[in-house]
Length: 408
Image 1 (tube, rainbow, N blue to C red):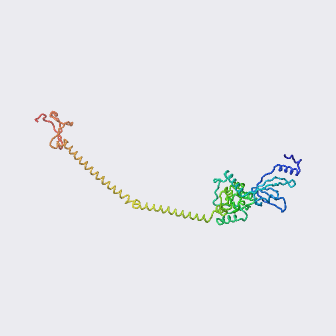
Image 2: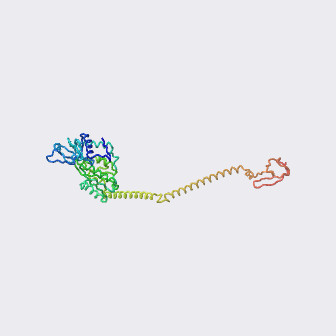
Image 3: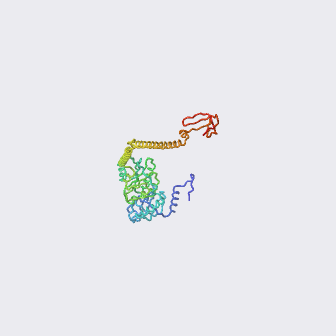
């Protein structure tokens, strides 16, 4: 039950300690997993003191257990080992501290560790943390490269030295942290978050050299895997050797086989890029020259065409000849037509002449007409004293009728 206290009615420290002890006592025995960080064993002592730490947090628990219980653990218990213990929480009234009285210890073997890692891998994969579409590309030329690694480690040397050989001007921000042991996960996560908050860092490398499965366990911790997934900065994982596959490799944006490979992935090789630029320029130069030569050939071919080389001979002369021939043909056709029509006119004239009364007059005949133009056809058509006009073959005469009824 909650204590009824106030500024006017406080309770002594001993009362609070007693209540805490009572609450803890009701908890009963519990199974706890963690990593042994301290092991105090005095010769002849019946009790052994241990410190059990949560690898993913800065939380530890004091353990007490019979000495023979620790002695009988196989393989022998040592600092850094992962164990599962059963114990009853105890509260030390005088010191105000919590401990766990252990009555059973079970080492976590390699097989069990691998089975747990595989179970965690399937769980995180089902959440989508390893999805390919979440992988981000690395910047071509990073502004600053963040590096999380052990202090003065071979991994740090390999990354920095290979990056310097490839592009000496790219700066690094190095965060040295423990890469194994009880504090590794917490400090790696904190270093990762510090680099992720730095706006100048646009790629982060997690690097560690090779080691046993137990040594690489921090890089398969769920908290670290989720921290890498939450990073806004692309992460390159370079943990162990190529055959090692900690879970952080699966969530990282790029998985490098070694720290040296990580430097190659994150930092461009200036010499290699300059060589590529030179090759690209040479290919472009050849291509441009090939295009120019192709177009020059086309121009020369076009210029060599008779139409352009001798436009008069190839274009005008044939048409001039054709025009001359056309004019000649037209003239001949016109002459032929005129001759034909002249002949027709002559024939028509001959026919008209043959039928014309003038032809009859030309033979000595005459046409007698009255003054009004009427033709005198009979003696009855004229009277004595009528004036008549006699049309001859050439000219005409004016006569007066003096004898209208003379002999025929």
